[in-house]
Image (cartoon, rainbow, N blue to C red; front, side, top):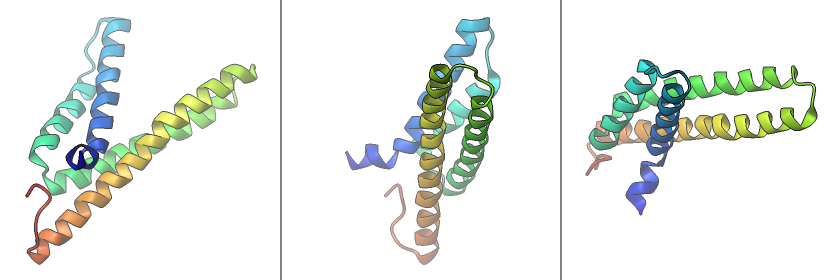
Length: 126
């Protein structure tokens, strides 16, 4: 159980990326190679637990999530009907707000693991 909770941020982003790949393929019958690349790197990261790559991925995914959250907020003003706007806002902030939180957890987890490694303590994968 603890192992699943420790890997929850990566699992969240794998699920989100898989949805992104499938949605693009179903809607336009094209493969989104950027999403496929992110999902592949995240799946490898789930098993390898490379600390520096984990920090970098967390930062990149956090910035992307924050950008998308602000994009949702800017789109919110353009809706004429409150119900549609509220639905967009609640789903968008829910998904991308969770992305920011999970990315922050990811960065924190791997920075702590890097500090422990530098001190010679037990590593994340041990």
